[in-house]
Length: 366
Image 1 (tube, rainbow, N blue to C red):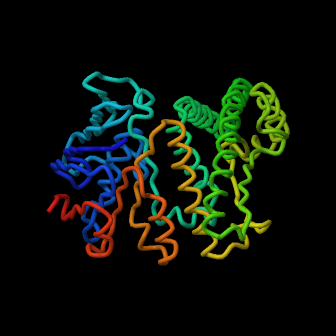
Image 2: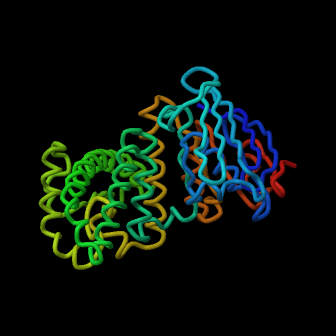
Image 3: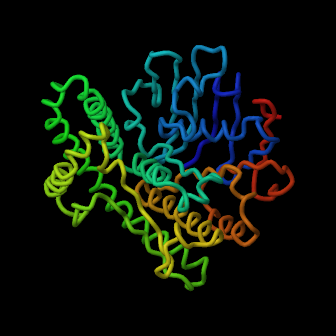
């Protein structure tokens, strides 16, 4: 699996760009604020239809332009393929083409160009708030399982509607009549999310433990623990049972949610933590332990995606090597001997032996 060519028009700071890549390591160099991360964002968006930075589509469109165009030529699934996204400002929906045929949703390109992004913020994800860890898991699962992405979108839609009901009921008590219906649907979809998450985190933890064991020489036992609402006694239980567990939890919090006017609990609060030989990293782990564990998680994510698609996903390292000491740099680089990799770096001469070097300046390839 590899991205052979990328064409951009009015994406971020790129007015026009056409660039080809090597099947191995591609080193993207240049000073800060020249467009290196924008290039990785375009690659990531091409294969997933999601941005790891932008909250709104308009943020990815070059200032003063009405639309942005992202197109890439990919060798995947043993054949050449073409993916194209057109993003519009305003309310006009984006457009997606695969091999010249218009598609309705990002799920229709699942597995064509899966990517794994690793950025400096990810190094401390195990010390961050729960939202950052949920985002890590959601991003991976959305690529692995398009049905998970659809369920997550549906859950967030229902959650938003329920939030409006809880806020409005003080002024309009009648809106509470539909609240039980929203709670039931929220629990049904939330049960699907828990089922997917339990299995994903189980596999992720086992794969990450292997990498961490290699790095630490077996000195530390890596354990990942998925945490959801307290009434879910077995996250691997059938979806019907998980639905009942969630309904029980919401019933227990019904009065508190009415009084606060907020959705206080549910799978949208899920989290996971990592312990090393019984020591919780978030509370007691050193910076070095935390970074090593984060590296292990990302390498494990790449492995799981490779198993799923039968090809290694494209690895995107956004200035992460400069944040690591020599030992951790070597460990990461020793794990990327195969597959296509993109590495951004502000120091042009530092990693030039790794592969092809592409220098970026002011949204252009030099």
